[in-house]
Amino acid sequence: MRIFEKKDFPANSRSLKDIREFSRLVISGSTLLEANKDELVLAIGEAAQNIVKHAYEDRQDTADTMLIQISFIDKKLEIGFFDKGKPIIKENIKHRSLDDVKPGGLGTYFIKQIMDEVVFKDAKGWNNNLVLTKKY
Amino acid sequence: MTYKITESGNISTIFLSGEIDMDVSEKAKEFIMPIIEQGKEVHLNLKDVEYMDSSGISILIESHQKANELGNRVVLKEISKSVLKVIMMAKLEQILILE
Image (tube, rainbow over all chains, first blue to last red; front, top):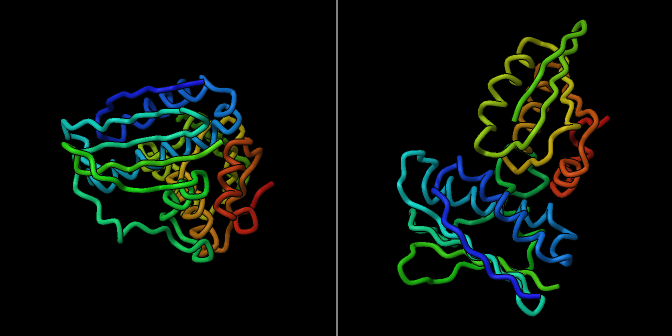
């Protein structure tokens, strides 16, 4: 089973639903991935939300797009997010402690719970490239 | 996301449906928080919520904390399987009121 799909989306919050629909469609191409579809869609949705919220500061008027690329090859799922928003400072990315119950700060925690690896890479022509991976 | 509100005495039940994400979370707060601020007990029926992300979870926490502050409560009813998974991932099942 080999999956490789990519798609551009406007870098604003109105795209989040479309991003989830795209993700569900791609994930449904593999019974292995389908088994934890809800969690994977949540991780993808949270990562896309972080781009909208932090790289684009939730501006609805941006003409930029973000690229989402999903591959599943040799039982390794890799989800890449590429954007041209404000460069992310890796050191600032942290989730709140679960014991400190308050609104916010859970998105990154969810992504880390669901995926095996969450890393920022350099990608030519893009300001941010987040890569989520999970082995099956 | 769509919603419907029913009233019975001091209890307002809000039936939420669809997907709750960052794009609709402010709208959800706009109709949930004023009801809590009126001093009513709020029941959030989540049977038809198909997806909830961290923005939706933030609304649940904020609602719960605001109600507590006012000596009242927000009760989560008929929580869908997908929402329950997210609540449990956030380890909130012992903090929020689930029925």
